Structure formats: structure tokens, C-alpha cells
Length: 111
Length: 107
Image 1 (tube, helix red, strand yellow):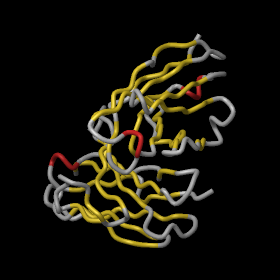
Image 2 (image 1 turned 180 degrees about the horizontal axis):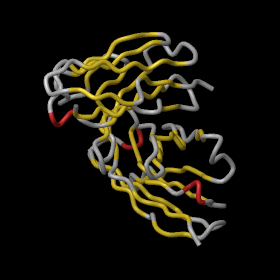
Image 3 (image 1 turned 90 degrees about the vertical axis):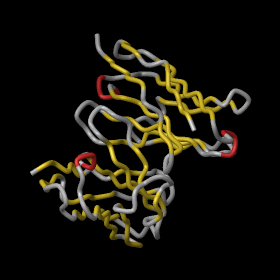
Image 4 (image 1 turned 60 degrees about the vertical axis):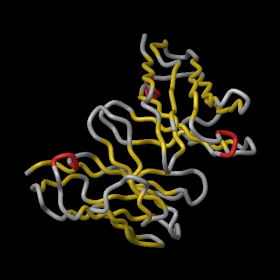
């Protein structure tokens, strides 16, 4: 199993960013997938999940600003982030939550 | 929403010690609980799912117990590679939530 995140970087407050997670080594379309983040020096925070049928769920802290989607034809998970604030600065992990995690991509929101 | 509380937040232990970490859910979650290990600068690693089931490849010195609201993670004999931060997480319906973490340090 491999999960490879990309798309992180430096963005100004109020800006947008789209993260991607390329999955391999398992049947992606049959797996619910999640995004988890970790702010510098802090613990893990569940951000969002998407089920096999495409239903999405979000933490209150990101609801209305973040959108999770998936492309099963490309075995790829996405996280579209908008209206970003400094509080969104974190390492973002893609995960099959109870089993496999990616290495993470860093998002820094700063002017 | 279900909140997860871990205790202690940190502990100091010696190589060879037996260590137990506790995780409490704010309401019953049956056995929908996972444990993760995170070493500094690394991604979390799954240790246990379903409260007591070891992930493939995880050594048997790790064990999980509990159901309902109270859960434990035990490391039977600490080794240098076990010094890390451990997190519990429930997946009994959305929103999922993690405990605050327990940092296991060398005494």
C-alpha cells in the first residue's frame, strides 16, 4: 500500500489550495478515505472522510471551506481548501484510517 | 460529538518496563477504536484496530483492551524504538476524533 500526498505549500490567508493523494497497492474504490492534519507541535486532528459511495463528512473547523472528493479511475483522493487561515497550517495526511497513512504534505498559511 | 480523552498526557519509563495508556470515550463506541504510534517527524503508524486487533506486522508486545467507553493500550516490555507518542481514535460514526496523545519518554 502506498499513499502519496502532494500539493502542499505556502499560501496567503484567504487563499486556496488543492491537495492530492495518489493511492496504490489496494482497491481504492472499495476503501473509505480520510484526511487528518497535525498543526506544528500539536496532536492529530481528523479533517474529513469520504466513503466508497462518495458521501463526505467534515470536522466543524473546516466545514464549508474544505471539500473532499475522489477519482476512482485515477486512484486519487483530493482535498480542496479555501478561505485558509493561519489555523489551517499543518501537515496534512491522507489515510485509510485504521491501517495505512501517507507521509504527509505541509500547508503553511502566512502572509 | 464523541470526545476522546487520553491519560496520562506523558510518561517516563525505562527500557523493559510495562506501560499502560488509557483512552476514554465520552459515550459508548463499542469496539470502534484504533491506536496509532507516531515517532518524531514521522507519519502515524497503525497499531491496533477494533480495540484489540493487532495490525499485520505489529509485534505482540502491543496489546489493546476495552469496549464501550474505556480502553487501554499496553506495551509489555518497552524497547528504545517504542519511545514515541501514542494516539487513540474512535470511528463510531462521524465526526471521528483522536485523543490528545500520550508521549512516552525515556526515564
